Length: 494
Ligand SMILES: Nc1ncnc2c1ncn2[C@@H]1O[C@H](COP(=O)(O)OP(=O)(O)O)[C@@H](O)[C@H]1O
Ligand SMILES: O=P(O)(O)OC[C@H](O)CO
Image (cartoon, rainbow, N blue to C red):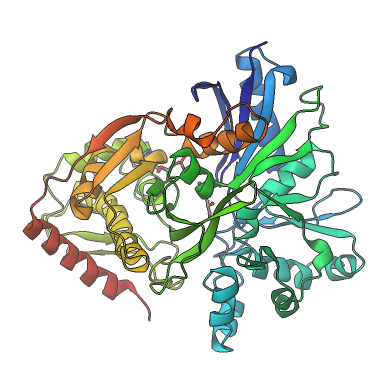
């Protein structure tokens, strides 16, 4: 009987299920968007039932498309939007509040107070993270402090916390397993990336009872077996990783110094830093890339909050395009931006600026400026942000980045990829399979159950679809970068 790996990719705006064969080819894909909930300015929530409902329906669709069932699935891999926080009743499995999404800024002021109180160094040394509302810890605290009855339940040991991976595993096992993987744990701001344990001092600081927390497992191991009726057969859940770490593995960035950037809603650049964490001096994050067996691999990360979503704003806000892919045609209709710069800080600036109060800025507008110049400047703004991360990463790692592997929705844009290569003066490599996030989770799962024998066997499958080589002159690049950094200065609030 032919066997496959089923990968669940639970992203910020949609849930996907992808079936991969032994060669790493995509055999079927199903995708459903689900509603974004914006209760107040700066708040972003998801309904946990809609997360599971959309994920369950795409699983059914993806396996029925190719006429297989649970018996054909060697293992399930899960990869997920990270940091997003869900709390549910330990007995019933019922969430006590909506998922608070990674983009949600409701705990910003509390985070400011932690910085002012001098906790920055301690938190960075233990977790590798910079104090920010982005991570799970302050979101958990907010639910415990604001949802009636939550704290009492937590103190009685009747409440469970999970990131989206843990929630999906709970749903797949009908409220039985309460586990997460080490990469997701490393994004909570409660996990010590050196001792590889939940940190008691941090739990005390955030006033979070330890009984809330899931058990932490390696990224590639059998964590649980499904009991949901979708499969009518117990399928092992054998690979779990946060989506950016999964993409790093899916891109086979397995050597220290290798780098990938994912151009999705945001952009996330990760560099494999080997078996030792590099604590950033240039405002990047240190995070766990994966654990296979006993071996932990670390990564440096630059998180950009607004990437492809600036193109969505051109579509939905300015209404100058009707689909994201149209932006390339519009932007190529002019030769350059004619002096226009677009800093896409629509929800603040992430690494390396970390200014949550910054907002977007379009500069250099003249009588001749058209919407095409603005569209081109928006794409360049994505690439400039990536340039700033690369600069910090090279300083932190003391390495020159010689090639950048890319994936995510906006990596399909040739104009953006060529500009990225020009501005970095580095080759940009786009792989055959751009669903690298799902592929990475599939690889973790397949390795755990012997579907693939070794990382080397997998590495041999990775193939380039397009290589972008730098073409611009050093003078052009220097002038563009000066213009960009001038524009950034104007938009920062501190
Ligand atoms: N051809 C394109 N050019 C630029 N941006 C694009 C293009 N196609 C899709 N995008 C952007 O890519 C993002 C979707 O990518 P995806 O990897 O699916 O994101 P996510 O996983 O964050 O939901 C959207 O923000 C969309 O605007
Ligand atoms: O769901 P994505 O692809 O936008 O990724 C979200 C990140 O994991 C947030 O840290």
